[in-house]
Image (cartoon, rainbow, N blue to C red; front, side, top):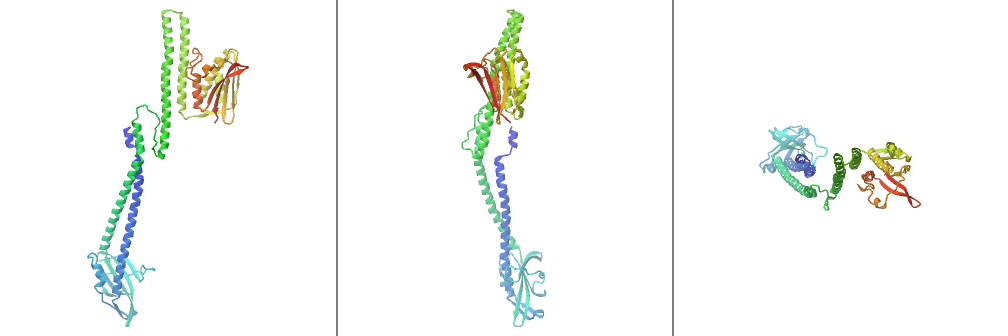
Length: 469
């Protein structure tokens, strides 16, 4: 049992994983998105500064000559580079060239730009930004096409300003770390809230489990959980229903053991007395054997009927029901009991119609056999006995009418109770109890009514009503 519990799925763990896993994935995706946005904002800010430096260099350009014969000159002031050199992390490189790539000033090792100006540049200038490598370092390059005009000439200058990425990477790492800390804190808060909520949500389950474990053995009373959440109520109701069925089974088992111990003790005691009497010679051997045979027959009938009563309860719990024609069952049972009918010269009549009901075949046979056997037993020799089956859209009715003395008012009050036979020498008093158990198991009903003509009881009508399939 402990091994099964250890391998079972924890509801709290399932809920926590179900809550925290998607939230964690969302936080990771959100962290990546925030980092990309922050990195884009950093690049935009530093690209703007690169463009400002390129424009500052462009303001120092001078030209002599026009177009292809133009000669560019530039004097780059220290102020153009000051914004990048003040942080002591990034390094700045620049190159000023003519449109055809001829070097004017700056770092000749910086590769000349061979790209194209975007159709919609991010700024109101002919500018392009790209990533490159220079002198073994990754750099970010801003290219500005700067028209230059003077009284002595006109030309187009290509200004390239490259910045190493140390500062950008440092700032990006700082942004990432800050973002991760905030997202980790958010995830921790969500996890704490989820744990608290799950703990509170599963508290009724744990309390209910503790209550069931603390119950004494054999206590199958209904569970009372007034503060249970609405989602738990179907489980509580289903558990109460199962425990009710178990209590019913236990009650029947206890009743069977009690009745068996009580009812079988008497015939066994009588049998022992009869055997001892025969051994002492108090009575003739044949007379003793006749009485012993009668006692054994009564004990056999009693044991069989007690087992039948227990079997009804067993079949009630099974779900392997099938549609059975009651008329065929009745005719088969009547054929089995025909020697008894013939022995008493009973005028027997049977009238049936096809009537299918959902049941176990044994239950229908036992029901019919007990009712018909009782009717034969109480019908006087030469009397009449009739079986009629009728049906409508919802129910089947089987009526067994005998011509016996009927049922007294005193006996009718306890007729369906076990061991309440009208004549204890000729019955155990279990037949009608079995019939009632069977009809209730099939969601039907049984009734016994005296048939009265001119104020005189002329027989008994036993009517069973069962729902159709």
